[in-house]
Image 1: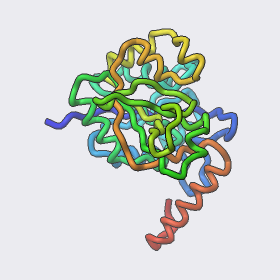
Image 2: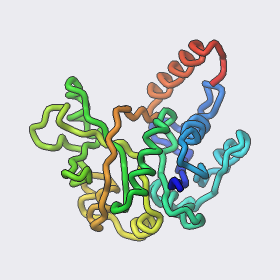
Image 3: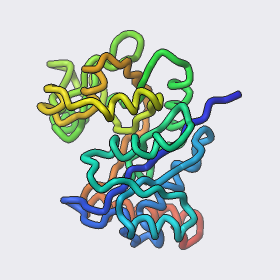
Image 4: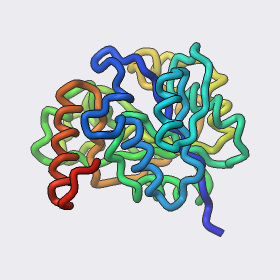
Length: 251
């Protein structure tokens, strides 16, 4: 029998750079629905759940027929929100898919589930090799880099260019989708941030600090998360172009 995983989308209303982001609806759908619909296209994810502490988001998800779970408003991270919902489920594997990734590749999500089910790793995530001309991305602290060992497991994540002196096409850019064994997620959420995590502002370093094996699945799909008004405007344009190509006006 093929392994399956629950997908949990942590979604919050507040956003410094793009307030009310999950409910932006210039495409005809709220952004959170685009993410939910894309995740539902994966073969190995069931159920797909939006986790939020905001009644407006919960109402929007209910209106389009999605499953939503209300969580504590005191969580400091999406992982904490996901862990709260995962504790209510009996799924052995849980994928944490950010609620602002409307174009995440469903095939990549399935590959994460397959890697997790293969055993030996508590946590799996995605990364892609930078292109030769992506010098700005290599230096950009908003693009997290990862170095892996010979088994395809993470050695370290950093906002700095790693390995030192590498060309862009020798570096891997991390993409923040996480597949967890449920018991590992619970242990992670119960632990305190480590020094490296606080310095880099990267919570996946806590998993490495705890001695967890972190598998890295390589993809050729670039992450196109929505963080700013210009990101959203570009996404709206891509949606319109796809609708025109299909000969429809729908999202």
